[in-house]
Length: 121
Image (tube, rainbow, N blue to C red; front, top):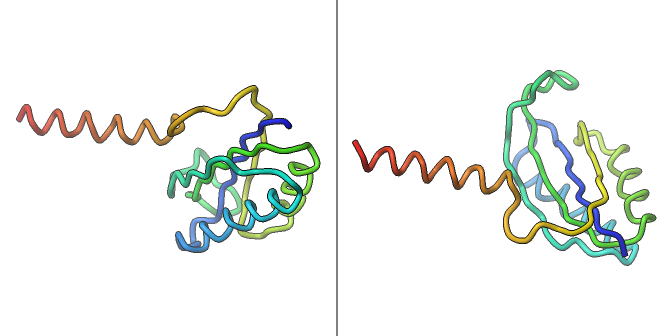
């Protein structure tokens, strides 16, 4: 089976519960077609580099998928139909990253450096 990373951006006016429901729906689609979601990360509400459909921010979500190509085709088809998703991207990878992704580690690193600065002052 092939390994994929699927990232989608949800509209800024959605609540966190609605974003989690979108991720759960994507997981159901993958599992229905004999695939498996090995990791789901919600990166939170982030600023966009430019406006997309009048949105300046978006909720970012990452799914690590293990499954055949039909899974990705159906997931992208369903995502394209959904009005709450403003952008998505699926990339085939050789192996999934162990532990938290780079986006999650960046937040930990920022909190650690902020804490270190406060201790010095």
